Length: 130
Image 1 (cartoon, rainbow, N blue to C red):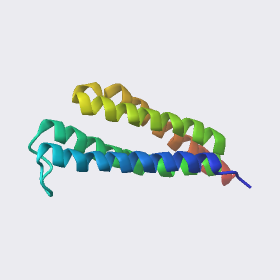
Image 2 (cartoon, one colour):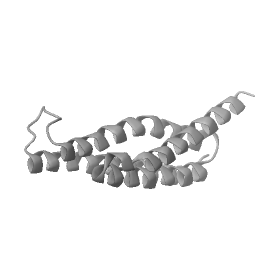
Image 3 (cartoon, rainbow, N blue to C red):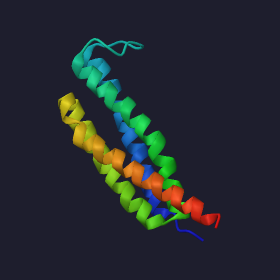
Protein backbone atom coordinates (compact mmCIF):
# COMPACT_ATOMS: atom_id res chain seq x y z
CA UNK A 1 0.00 0.00 0.00
CA UNK A 2 1.16 3.52 -0.77
CA UNK A 3 1.73 6.25 1.78
CA UNK A 4 0.23 9.39 0.28
CA UNK A 5 0.94 11.80 3.15
CA UNK A 6 3.54 13.79 1.23
CA UNK A 7 1.59 14.34 -2.01
CA UNK A 8 -1.42 15.18 0.16
CA UNK A 9 0.66 17.89 1.85
CA UNK A 10 1.68 19.26 -1.57
CA UNK A 11 -1.98 19.25 -2.62
CA UNK A 12 -2.89 21.24 0.49
CA UNK A 13 -0.13 23.74 -0.32
CA UNK A 14 -1.55 24.08 -3.85
CA UNK A 15 -4.99 24.74 -2.37
CA UNK A 16 -3.52 27.45 -0.13
CA UNK A 17 -1.77 28.97 -3.15
CA UNK A 18 -5.03 28.99 -5.13
CA UNK A 19 -6.91 30.53 -2.20
CA UNK A 20 -4.29 33.25 -1.71
CA UNK A 21 -4.26 34.05 -5.44
CA UNK A 22 -8.04 34.45 -5.37
CA UNK A 23 -7.92 36.61 -2.25
CA UNK A 24 -5.31 38.83 -3.89
CA UNK A 25 -7.66 39.37 -6.85
CA UNK A 26 -10.44 40.37 -4.46
CA UNK A 27 -8.16 42.81 -2.65
CA UNK A 28 -6.89 44.20 -5.95
CA UNK A 29 -10.47 44.81 -7.11
CA UNK A 30 -10.96 47.10 -4.13
CA UNK A 31 -7.56 48.74 -4.42
CA UNK A 32 -7.87 49.53 -8.13
CA UNK A 33 -11.65 50.07 -8.27
CA UNK A 34 -12.36 47.20 -10.66
CA UNK A 35 -15.98 46.14 -10.14
CA UNK A 36 -16.99 42.56 -10.97
CA UNK A 37 -17.46 41.19 -13.55
CA UNK A 38 -14.85 43.47 -15.16
CA UNK A 39 -11.34 42.03 -15.40
CA UNK A 40 -9.62 44.92 -17.17
CA UNK A 41 -8.94 48.58 -16.65
CA UNK A 42 -5.78 48.75 -14.59
CA UNK A 43 -2.55 46.97 -15.61
CA UNK A 44 -1.61 46.25 -11.98
CA UNK A 45 -4.98 44.58 -11.38
CA UNK A 46 -4.78 42.70 -14.68
CA UNK A 47 -1.42 41.16 -13.75
CA UNK A 48 -2.78 39.98 -10.39
CA UNK A 49 -5.87 38.59 -12.12
CA UNK A 50 -3.71 36.76 -14.70
CA UNK A 51 -1.60 35.24 -11.91
CA UNK A 52 -4.77 33.72 -10.47
CA UNK A 53 -6.07 32.46 -13.81
CA UNK A 54 -2.69 31.11 -14.94
CA UNK A 55 -2.17 29.37 -11.60
CA UNK A 56 -5.63 27.77 -11.84
CA UNK A 57 -4.84 26.57 -15.37
CA UNK A 58 -1.46 25.20 -14.35
CA UNK A 59 -2.84 23.45 -11.26
CA UNK A 60 -5.43 21.71 -13.42
CA UNK A 61 -2.63 19.81 -15.18
CA UNK A 62 -0.25 19.58 -12.24
CA UNK A 63 -2.51 17.95 -9.65
CA UNK A 64 -3.55 14.86 -11.66
CA UNK A 65 0.06 14.41 -12.78
CA UNK A 66 1.21 14.64 -9.15
CA UNK A 67 -1.23 11.97 -7.99
CA UNK A 68 -0.72 9.64 -10.93
CA UNK A 69 3.04 9.83 -10.38
CA UNK A 70 2.50 9.18 -6.67
CA UNK A 71 0.29 6.15 -7.33
CA UNK A 72 2.27 4.55 -10.14
CA UNK A 73 5.88 5.64 -9.58
CA UNK A 74 6.76 7.05 -6.15
CA UNK A 75 4.80 8.94 -3.55
CA UNK A 76 7.82 10.63 -1.90
CA UNK A 77 9.33 11.56 -5.26
CA UNK A 78 6.04 13.03 -6.45
CA UNK A 79 5.96 15.23 -3.38
CA UNK A 80 9.58 16.32 -3.76
CA UNK A 81 9.09 17.18 -7.41
CA UNK A 82 5.73 18.74 -6.58
CA UNK A 83 7.32 20.99 -3.96
CA UNK A 84 9.45 22.47 -6.74
CA UNK A 85 6.22 23.29 -8.63
CA UNK A 86 4.79 25.10 -5.58
CA UNK A 87 7.97 27.15 -5.15
CA UNK A 88 8.05 27.94 -8.87
CA UNK A 89 4.41 29.10 -8.86
CA UNK A 90 5.00 31.37 -5.85
CA UNK A 91 8.04 32.78 -7.69
CA UNK A 92 5.88 33.14 -10.82
CA UNK A 93 3.17 35.02 -8.91
CA UNK A 94 5.62 37.43 -7.33
CA UNK A 95 7.46 38.06 -10.59
CA UNK A 96 4.31 38.51 -12.71
CA UNK A 97 2.68 40.84 -10.16
CA UNK A 98 5.73 43.11 -10.34
CA UNK A 99 6.39 43.01 -14.08
CA UNK A 100 4.80 40.68 -16.64
CA UNK A 101 7.96 40.07 -18.63
CA UNK A 102 9.77 38.73 -15.53
CA UNK A 103 7.56 35.62 -15.22
CA UNK A 104 9.29 33.47 -17.85
CA UNK A 105 11.86 31.50 -15.81
CA UNK A 106 9.35 30.63 -13.09
CA UNK A 107 6.78 29.60 -15.69
CA UNK A 108 9.37 27.44 -17.43
CA UNK A 109 10.32 25.68 -14.20
CA UNK A 110 6.73 24.96 -13.21
CA UNK A 111 5.92 23.71 -16.72
CA UNK A 112 9.00 21.46 -16.69
CA UNK A 113 7.93 19.98 -13.36
CA UNK A 114 4.48 19.21 -14.76
CA UNK A 115 6.01 17.56 -17.83
CA UNK A 116 8.31 15.43 -15.65
CA UNK A 117 5.36 14.29 -13.55
CA UNK A 118 3.24 13.59 -16.64
CA UNK A 119 5.96 11.57 -18.37
CA UNK A 120 6.76 9.68 -15.19
CA UNK A 121 3.09 8.96 -14.60
CA UNK A 122 2.67 7.75 -18.19
CA UNK A 123 5.66 5.43 -17.75
CA UNK A 124 4.30 4.15 -14.42
CA UNK A 125 0.82 3.51 -15.82
CA UNK A 126 2.23 1.78 -18.90
CA UNK A 127 4.51 -0.34 -16.73
CA UNK A 128 1.53 -1.41 -14.60
CA UNK A 129 -0.01 -3.08 -17.66
CA UNK A 130 3.08 -5.24 -18.25
